[in-house]
Image (cartoon, rainbow, N blue to C red; front, side):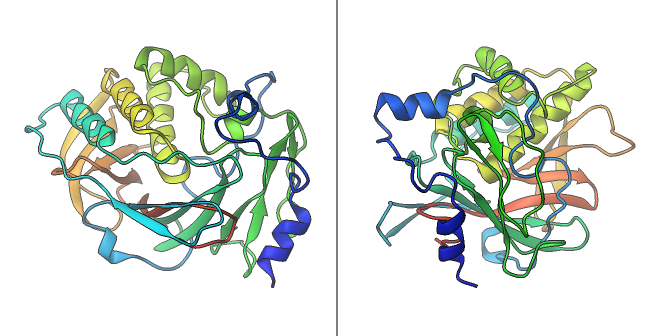
Length: 321
């Protein structure tokens, strides 16, 4: 299958001009939150993954994921490893999250352009031990792409996009998506307008993800925030300040508890922060590297969860870093 030709022929934004990332048009595009209602969440929900795939990059397990930046039209790749942080001992949830925020602020920054994609390779233990690859549109206006996994065609399949405020289903064999309103802020993998102040961030997340952020009780709200933190780490580009704000927001949650020693789904030991109340006997737990405080992964239970193996900014869906 010629993936490049398939994506080019069916790209809903192929004839649309992509503005410069510094232009007012680009900012308006990426910050747009104008539609009401409850649009479907782009890509998969952060809840236990339904798309596992094969393969593991064991060399990345000890230090978390790797991030690469690929300039549009250039084959050059500039790798950037997770930072090494010398921080004091963390014996409370607030201290762990504070150290994680400091680590995030030390991450290199390289914002993508609207026409690019965030590539991620994620290891999961849902339905077996696997890893899948996903390409998420930076602007949300282009079809994404996912390759490998349970129920996915051998050549992979495209994922929906958001164009002119309407959800557009990718052509077959991709699954049908109910048409309806969507927002660029929800659909995009990069959100320059996402607040870097924890106080403003919670309201932004509630408004941006109305179909995901729908807590009935206080502990439901914490569970949603844990899942959003992991989903954004896996699938989106967050600036260092945005990542730090998300961790600082979690540090304020009173119903999180520290797990001094916990293994992620690849068997590596870290320090965990989990919801105090179990969901059907299962706790959602963020696992951090106990030395660098980089996020290692999310455990849905003792035997299920996900770990980010690799992340990059690439110029087209299907491109590998």
